[in-house]
Length: 192
Length: 250
Image (spheres, rainbow over the protein chains, first blue to last red):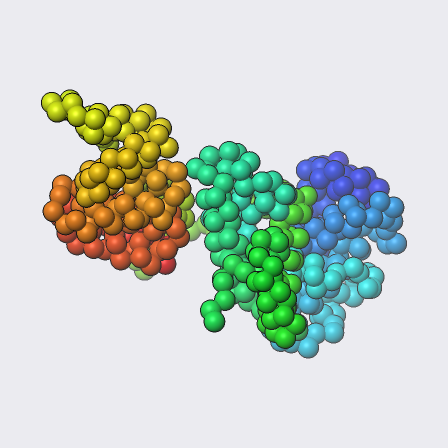
């Protein structure tokens, strides 16, 4: 597999280049996975933490045109994953977590404080729950959020009228809100 | 007083009349719960508007699935060496079959339910021997209905109903025409007239379309009751009503 410099990685991530993302996955997943598994996590937790860490970096690159790494990309990614997992452990298991298990951390550098806000985690919960509601709801809500009119949505999605779209949108939004409120991760986040 | 369940969204959309807007803002000042809900709605909108991240999330999920497929993560080779292995396999197969059955039987969204079960009632175009103005109007109305020209059909049906308010067939077609134009309250009113008349050939379809009207209104509780009533009888809609009952969301 082709190797990429940190600069290539940032450039590729900005453009969501699949090859670069695969490279990041291949060269970092194992470390992050070990961190999560050694600290009470499951295989799914490893995947979730890895994914949320990449999304946070992607948003940072998108929002900060002149973003520069102060460490290697791997260290930066690992630092974010570490903080996300500590937050998740604290919130979901009500554990006092200030340190993760040393035996596996000793060999890996991390920098603090990495840029992970609670809001990032809440937005991730909302977006994950969006995928759990009916597909027509997903489409109506995302198109509405892009300021597309009910009339255009009705035409685009083949619904019988814009008033149906408006009514359905209220139903879908309420459905999504209820799903989010039932989400244990959301409950843990707002109780913090 | 019961609060409109969509009031927060209407407030965010600036769809509330001034009076309701002022009342909502007054409530907002004193209710931390309402403030939290409003914050949640706003943050959800922010998350939904971030299409870059949404599609990046989809891309990562696809990669994750591909990776799991290619590396066989989670796949453990199974070797059958003992009789209980076969028992476990049979049990797993049974669980999978039950799971598959539940997937096939999973609830549909109301939109999908309507797509699956709604189709306009077929019109019978008859050559009427009596060529009165009224009969001509009924024939023209049914023709417009058949062609999907529902506005024109409604105009003609309603003109007939001014003279014959209890004509069950006309009320049925009029109700379905209103349904097609999303005038769901008018559709319900027409269908109720057919059912309340209680002595005509159109009661069964009227009951069925009334159930679908409730689905379109997202009033699943009434829709379920309506379908249960139809399913317990022996009308030609009983089978569809039973299926719809299994598919409608609670």
